[in-house]
Image (cartoon, rainbow, N blue to C red; front, side, top):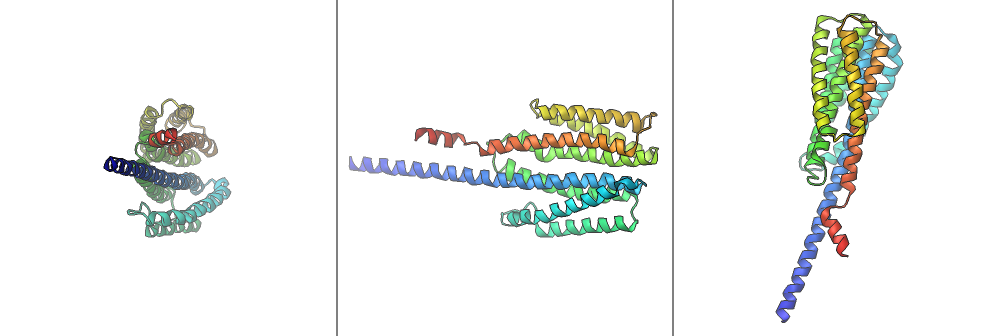
Length: 297
């Protein structure tokens, strides 16, 4: 009898310790994923501002001086984002496999400063500015994807909607990037008043990729209001692109095109933000095990 009571007591203690360990592990994993979402938000802001700076720089290099004040403002915002990433690097380098390292950020910062110096010297052509900006955006998107997969999707598997994670850190940022490229190239076309063959081919390619990504992202969106609005706004931008930049209609200014493209990109980022809010809600909600334990007490 005594042995049975002893064994029973040991089992109760063991189960309690196992339950505590699982709750603690889930809590730590959720905390890591929530911190990663903060880092993802910072990278999304960096990408978004770089995209704006790219479009403005192309228009400015094409001869539209009205973008100069906005260019300086975006440069300051990008500097602040890069400085804030120092905190992300410190946290990542404390992890077993860092998604972003100090050396990578140093190279990124150097390439950004070099781009600004070249813009100021007047040595860059619009196409060269597009290329250099694109390299920086691509690197930031790689960091974003790595953080989303390693720290959010894998780190909190079973607690978050994987389709929403992929939309938040991969599909929608890629869509915004293609839209940003179309905004930049289209701004240059509108500034010149004509669409060169190379720009025409590029815009046609971008339009096809944009429409394919919209369909892909909508399939995982579950009919959200932000998703529907983004689909509508991007569709309007594609209509303007084909009618006024690729077609024979013309008659659109760089400022008007930039504003319409920005509305489409903003709608995609509103969709990204909605995904982020939902992911936070899922991560902060009690796990089934924790709910069962709370109910038992």
